[in-house]
Image (cartoon, rainbow, N blue to C red):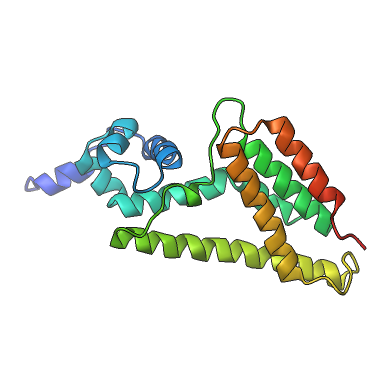
Length: 203
């Protein structure tokens, strides 16, 4: 068989673990945001060179989207499990306390990745903003639909607007994330959640 450099290259094992590298990129993006994370900082954290980054993950925008997918799978798993709560209040409880646990960690205060340093100063940032908005809208819709089902089941009063209640809940959740980012201790955030839940419009 004739020697082919391209075949030889394809046959070589990777010199790094893509999953480990992606997790490292996620930490950089989560800390600095999309535009605040430079390629040199990303490649250093990932332990690879720029050619390997482009070959494995694509450009910086594609890398961020993959990191965001990982973030949603791992860090936002509590949001998916919250939808299985037996009541609308239970959904709110799991979402809010889950946010406190996720964003008010003992070792590092971090915000929601989707809100970290995204601006529209570059075309790719515009594209990412649109993607993030679509993801957020999808989450809002899922919660609104869950609350609509709760109203049909008699768990919420007929006068409750499920979409508006979902927006109130997400506003509270985002407020917790901002407070956690600025260093508000977990104990205080937990009290805020408890007060909000005390006002929950149960039937």
